[in-house]
Structures are given as C-alpha cells and as structure tokens.
Length: 74
Image 1: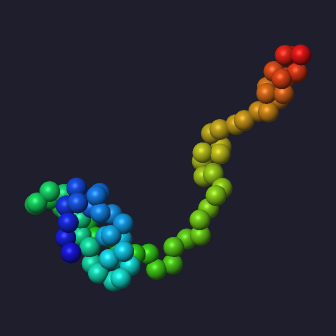
Image 2: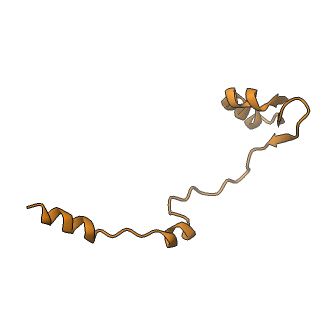
Image 3: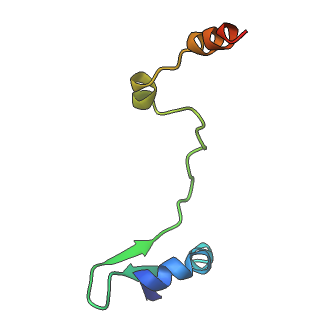
C-alpha cells in the first residue's frame, strides 16, 4: 500500500494496524517524491523514564531557593 503524507497524517492509526498485520506501507511525499516504508520493530527497547545523560548534565535544580523564599514570606 502506498499513501501520501497528507493521507498518512489523517489515517496513521489505520496504517499502523496494517503494518502490524504484516502489510507493507509506504508513505510518499507528493505524487513523485521519495517514498518511506513503515516497519514494525521486532524487539523494541524498554521504555526509559530516566532523562538523557547529556540533558541531565546541562540542567540543575536547586530546592534551596524555593525553601528560602517560603520562609521569607512570614
């Protein structure tokens, strides 16, 4: 089965179901554009709820500022 990007956006759930059933689904950019195939992953990785290490290194949160502001209000 081959669909355009517009049709894929409006019917994504149905297309994913067809892929799960074993049908080949291709999404094409326009009529003559490049085509992309949707494939099911056999053994998907476990969902990771931990932040990405690079993001964790770039961010920091300090609770001290929050506690100090609460005590100053009284």
